[in-house]
Image (tube, rainbow, N blue to C red):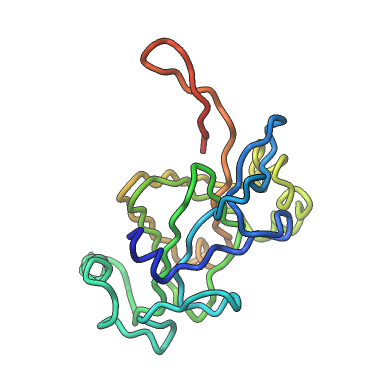
Length: 208
C-alpha cells in the first residue's frame, strides 16, 4: 500500500486553516500546526478524482471510466471480497481512493463524497485504525465557526450531534442512505496525551 501511494500519491492539500502541505504536529501549546521542519505530509493520497493540479492520477481512473482491470491485485481482491458480501445493493465501482498517513496526526475535513460516486460508500482501514466522525449537515450549518476551528472540534467535535465510528485496523465501514447524503464524514486530528510505558514512565501520543 505504501509503495502504491509513493508511486501514484500526491501530498494532500492542506485545508484553508493550514494552507500548506507539510506534516501536522502539536506545538508546545497543544495546537495543531504545520511542522516547522517542513516534513511532507500529513498524508499521501491516491485518487482519480480531479482535485488539484499537482495530483498524479492512478492508472485505474475514476467514475464511469474506472477500469477494474488496472487495479493492483491486492486492491482488486479487496474489491471482489466486498462485492461478494451479502446485503449490499452495489452498482458499478466508481472510485478507489487511498489515504496513507505519514505521521500520527491525520485529518480529513467534514465532507460528502461526490454524488456521482453512487449510493454506497465503504471505508476500509488497512495499515492502522481510524475514528470516523459523522456530522449531520444541518448541525454543521448551525455551528459553522466551530466546525472549522481545530481547537474547538479537537475537544468537542464538529457538532453536539456527531457520531464517532471506531474503525479498527482491517475494518470495513459501509454507509448509505441518510448517512451517505445527510451526514458528512471526517477524521479529526486527535489530541496530545501522555501514554504509560512498561518502565513506569510515559511518552507523548495521540488520542483519536
